[in-house]
Amino acid sequence: MIARVRILLVGLITVWGCIETLALSYLLSPARFHSHFTGTVTRWANGLLWALGVRVTQCGPLPDLRKHPLVLVSNHQSLVDIPVLLSLLPEIRIIAKKELFRIPLFGRAMRRAGFLEIDRSNRARAFHTIDEAAERVRAGTSILVFAEGTRSRDDHIQPFKKGAFVLATSAQVAVVPVAVRGANRRLPKGALSLNPGTVHVAFGAPLPPSPPEKRAALLSATEQAVRSLYSGLPES
Image: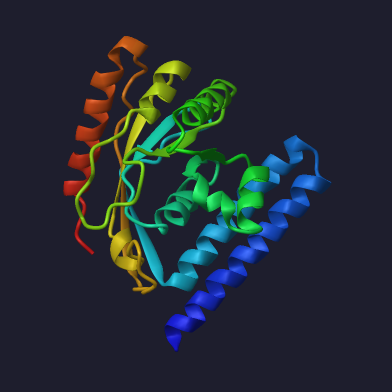
């Protein structure tokens, strides 16, 4: 019974957030919309976590996105990762898989809000998304990428894909390693079970901008940093 109430609340909060996003995106100028959208994201993410019974702990200082844009690279355990990270950094935009954009209302709201859709089954389209993301980063927008490409089914971090590092080296910005632990136990991949509890997030020190020819080294250093951060977080 409690799980059904939680699911209902998640649906209502998400629908309201989508309606607010769409309405503001059409009623306000782009500058005013993006100013207001941070509040919308904060309310949606915090409301969703409250409905799910998820608490978030943070380790390491939050990156200062006001100074300069960054590419944040995180592991990916669950759909819960998205509200968890947006509750901490509502200004970021996310590169998300195309399936999320197929959800009625939700997908349209994501597009209007500036989130980017990536089709990993189509190499040309995927690199077009990366190019578009690089342009946005150079214009001042910080981007979050889940570098494994898909959610893991257990506590193990999968090998990182190179897309995030093509983006970072193209935009010539620093990369911030991010580790999330415990989200897969709150909402496991492929399951409908909701399990209240804590999700832990750790932010590492930014890795300086690298030229394209150093992309592989940047990938390796970031993956190592994320794994190290992850191992330092408590199990939930």
